[in-house]
Every structure is written in C-alpha cells, then in structure tokens.
Length: 93
Image (cartoon, rainbow, N blue to C red; front, side, top):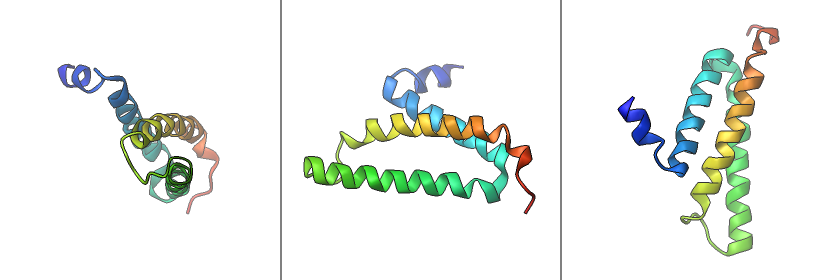
C-alpha cells in the first residue's frame, strides 16, 4: 500500500500507473493476439502526437510531450479495458 501511495502521489505519475494497470487488465481479457490491434493504435497515436508537436512547437520530444502522452494514454487504455470486458464475443484464433 505504501508503494501505491508513493506511485500515485503526483498527478503525472497517476496517469502512468493507470495506463499500465489498464493495459495489463486488457491484456488479461484480450489475450496476446487481440491486444496487438489496440497497441498498434496506441503507437500510431503516439507518433501522430509527436508529429503534431514537431509541426506546432518545432520540438521533437521534450518535457511538454510526456504529460499529454500519459494522460491521453490513460484514457485510451481505460477505453480499451472497458471494451475488452466484452471480448468474449471475439473469435478464437
């Protein structure tokens, strides 16, 4: 419990922790094959965020990138986790 309090003490680290937790729970629900599709979408989204920052701020990956990345990653991972709760309808591969 002390480790959890230490990890979630700062708002920015809360997003990192929740992203990882939601991704692990989605992995448990979706299995190794189906989790590849949401992960690919997450990677494409991260590259688009880098491109947007490069065009808009003329920066590649600086400190301003990471809070936005982890906040939106936590939201995306939460959506993927909720969708994975209905994964019993997916075909077996």
